[in-house]
Length: 119
Image (cartoon, rainbow, N blue to C red):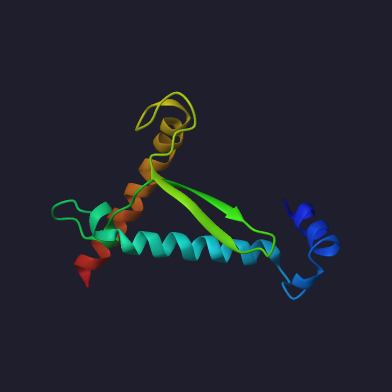
């Protein structure tokens, strides 16, 4: 990907030469889009009784398009993105990923919760 970006910027998009780190430029836009959508749906996506939204997590997938000027456009965002073999905990590739991540995610959420209780 980096090789493609360098080649693109040197051959086809010379007007974008001011972007010193194209990968970081794209990544920042993706993170900003994800943060904006997450903030907009925070109270809906994290609506578990007794759990503060900042102590929750949600596994999502997002599709982006990068245009010729390296502007990022979010096409869609889905809960439980499916790779193959089904969707949800314990199912297919996503299930394998989920099963590896879940213990660490729970540890992090629990650590934040304990720190909030302690003030």
